[in-house]
Length: 465
Length: 59
Image 1: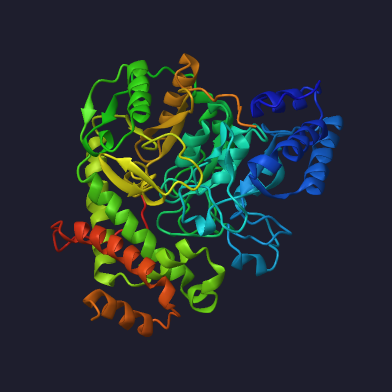
Image 2: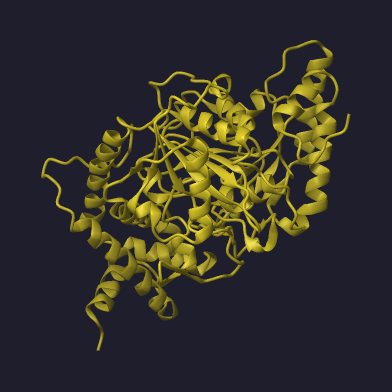
């Protein structure tokens, strides 16, 4: 059996486990696709071919010996280059971090993916220090959109979106502080899961904003997304924010449960403004498919976005303060200047933002007493052109870079779980956020699965290269 | 004549020992203006004195 470029992780694992495909052949096929296409997509910064082959051979040996292998046996995957990969310097999209010593141990989530049988094939391009929504990188060049390589992948997990959207790998991992999983999912037309804050361990990944950072998977099907998510759950003493109170809560067995009993609302007000027509169309299609008609006002979402912005720029400045002093010319100037400005925001304003956060969380908790799911746009538009500086949003000319995430920021601000589902509009796909109450990733994934089965959410074949 | 925000940028640059070059100044100022405008939006929202911050958000 040979692999097809768009073969799902579930199908690869089934074929490998059943002896119809070797893990090594699945790995070689992914490596060949990367060699063939990544000169255009520019999604990978490191290809760990030797390591991948060794891991694949070990899986094949286990199968030959009759041993049980995991649910992701032989599935190639890659990670945003802010995850520690043993033997590589964790660059986090920067020039400066390339001087760090190579990591001595993999990030927890890589260890868990590999324990489930997945095979790491490399590390992925990203916006510098994750302070980005475009997928552009001044040091490594932009990761490109697999549906039109003159357009942005979205960021900051741009390489993750590009590699999965381009079918180089079926699964990638990324991070999301203000939208960095959901934005590339939207632009690249794939599924992405930003779990509840504290659900998945961030141990041995390079941080950005500690109180907003999440890690999560990207995939070309909801089943693959759930398989990866389930493989990565569990407490971890190496991440202070990782939950110790929730046990393993597998979602894969629940995906096909009906959604007819769920109360689904459409986020109103702020979330219905500043949208291009394609974003309105995508939300409308999803709402119609789910029979959702109730519009739910999310109070003070604009202020929530503002508070997330303030916390991000100030916590980010704090993280990088010493690098700003010692190596300011080695930053992307746009990132450097934002971080320096962040260092100048007076402390009482940051405290106010954190206090507002608790107030806003209480409002959303109240909303989730009467709905199970909220639908909202993931991005205001489809993928802009690479290098595009401004767009016209709601009649106002605004910078693209800072405003792509205006609909994702008020959600991650309070850590709610979200699945970004791709709506395959022409000529470019666009994502919709399926938002659930804290710790209810299972519900968001069930709704995404239902939309996938209805054909309303689907991953387009890459055609940009 | 320097505007108050320029004076503020000068003062914080010195206080934090940040090596700000003149060529970066307009970009830093533009970014700071956006941050302060958004922070003001949050600042204007009245909260009870007892409100606890959520620096590490758990749900």
